[in-house]
Length: 224
Image 1 (cartoon, rainbow, N blue to C red):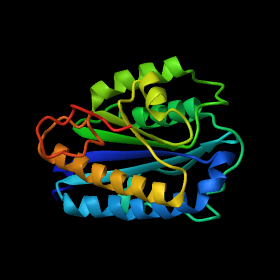
Image 2: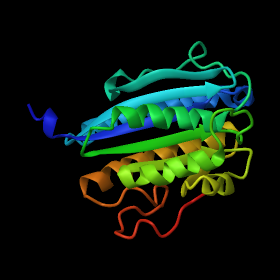
Image 3: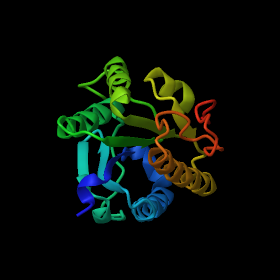
Image 4: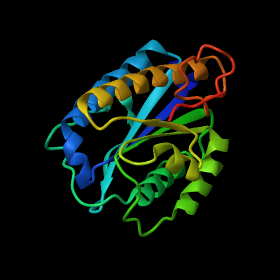
């Protein structure tokens, strides 16, 4: 009965499945599966929010839509059969495709937030449909419509690349088991703080990875 009054939060996760991810495949699977439990737990902790999941992986062979705008409780764990790194990194195409698909769905919706999480181990190297400028323009426009963008990366200049496409919330990690465990812990806490900001009617666009999110001034700095 109260479902219609719940604030909708769309979690869009774009996960790199290119060949270079093979070296960190095991910790990616483990960390992602822990994140699955986190997202499900957040919806229970914030009963006034209704969470949805869109989970898309990508490589040079195309995009795979694992979930699209489904209730978060349907989010499945991944394993060796569902996550098989291969080919190149058409990052801009994956972002443009994913943003467009969700944007079309939400065209006539009101009272929602979108949290975009992009996780990759390398920069763009194979897109054919979208340029960096096109993605930057999309991000700047969508931020005015309740979208928050986060970029998690390794093995490249994460902060400079994310800033180049207008993403201010970036997080870099070491491409080893310890580094990835630390990254997923930080992401989990940031996701929890994000839902707190929505509940408290605070700006959720910036300061996503700030250590202190209990302060009203949440956009002073970002960790990259």
